[in-house]
Length: 201
Image 1 (tube, rainbow, N blue to C red):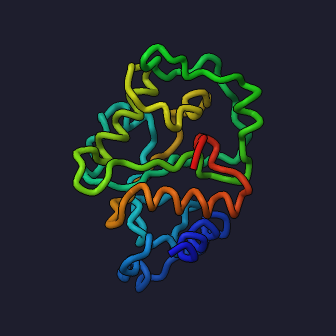
Image 2: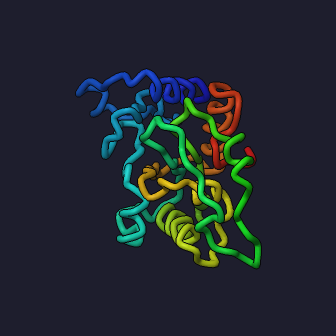
């Protein structure tokens, strides 16, 4: 499974296309199905099971109504290759009185220019009430200044172009935490660091 995830991350940079047969086949049983990922195209769906690729601006306007009510993993992507500008203070809410703002110098040091994946997150666990829809909705509301418990991934709310970032998601058959950890690990192998807004494995 790790090798399949690694191949998927490689395809982010290589931008390899899909054949019609690959698109119909879908992911192999027991894998994360990431061997055919192609985020350079930013399509609406792909055979790995990731879908959405919706701007944060639209998720704010629609209350995340298009997102699945099921456990899974999700990614925050930045399409632009230009260096970002950071805002101070953060747009995010002060949950339990905690200020989510960090120094611009910290954000600048954490920025990883080659990577388009800025954050890898999970939603729920098998048998729980938490779902991709509820978790991503909380994440977006946190970024709108609401006092919501979603400090994970908070660095993105200091990006000036945060509304243009894309979120895609995948319903998982395995435990979302397991899928999240594996994807973060493979990201670290490729980029020698965690995604920009992931502060822990």
